Image (cartoon, rainbow, N blue to C red; front, top):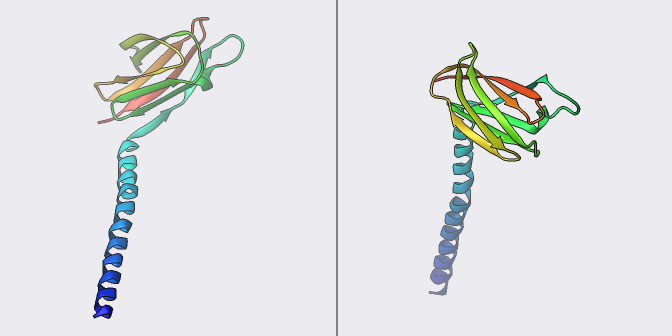
Length: 134
């Protein structure tokens, strides 16, 4: 009788181990799937100098596009930055001013080629070119 009880306990422990194994694997698998969805269509935007005085600040502007969403983050306090989003043909799509170091997101409704221009308080200008696809 004791063998059956010990066998039953061992079987119960193995079932627990299997359940715990799946419980630990599930979040890892799910996170991997979510990360691949988030980065699908992601493209980093290279920010270039148009004109600047003194120390270049282009490296403090981190811009990317994911689908129709433009995301910009400023990693340094640059003051109040004016941002213009325009088509490659020069038609203005959106204008805004943002206090740094923060960031913003904007939806770009139509597919096409765009330019985002950043004007710093001292007149320095930086820009990045990107494409929105459907």
